[in-house]
Length: 441
Image 1: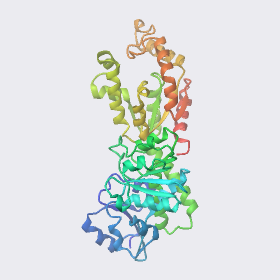
Image 2: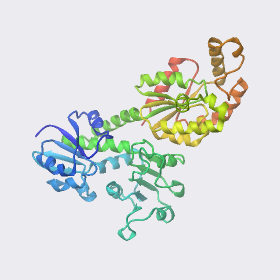
Image 3: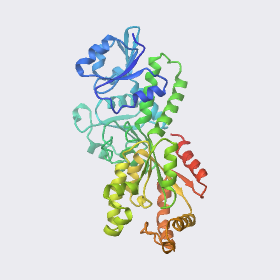
Image 4: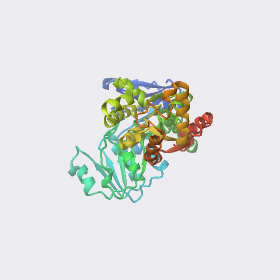
């Protein structure tokens, strides 16, 4: 038996599992893509110490195992196999991952009505977790299953069970690349306390973002993914007595992985330093950098100033939203939107799906001073008298102040963190990194 571990599946190119297991200290973890007719021989050859199993083999693998734990039996799926001296033991660590996610986010299911969206395999995991956490009523919402088999429809969920306190989404609705869909309208649930989504790409789905707007607790699937991997690792290495350390490792790996995948979005007025600071912080955090205005210019062969001049501001804003929607699909990037991006709430919804928004609050008088200094250095004297040909909406200092006064409340409303910028570049850079990195994930 080789001292190796595999993730079995049909298509694994988007998997984070190897990366996570490596972070957990298992460097003998590999991907194994199999067709259906290869599964039996690979599993029964037993030339491995442990397996993780993903779609579409979580049920199929069960017939080749010697023992299956109670949670996996109840769920009807196995995602972890341990080869113990030739005996194959099956577990479902998704159960532990989802349960730990709910606990980590301080969400209480006891005596609550829980709506589980979707009727696939993960819905059975969610049902088992809800039972374990003593939910009062558990309802599975399906578009395809029949009511006589114990399911309810989405219209029934929104009308008859609008008093539900907890929603758990196990459907793929809202998953990359179809980020901008939602399985349900949370506005119809007045007693809603928490929304749990098993999707981890994007980091925050439209479903959870809409709930967050109402200060409803939410959680995504990334912590679940790390937690179930940590439980698998514990089983692989027979470390069941190290729960406390395993939890600590889970938190560490989750925080590290989140910051690697998450975008840093810098908002603020033109001249606040989004590009200059963004380029530097991207380099230091090993992230890509995208300036929205530059991306607009690439896409349309016109600068924002030229688009506004020839087509009007409304046409520019529409183009800006399309570019921000594309940028929001990226991971591990620093994104600098234009100063007016906050005027469209949809831009913020897009950017928050994979990003953490930080407001660069540079006082107006400093911005104007910096702009004038730059113009004095780079332009002739005729262009230095309070004019800025590259910023058609802010041609004078008065224009700038008026626009800032209109946008200031939006910057503060949408930012998750705020960094005061005082023209001390090194200090500003340090504060941006701390705002991004140094809080509970």
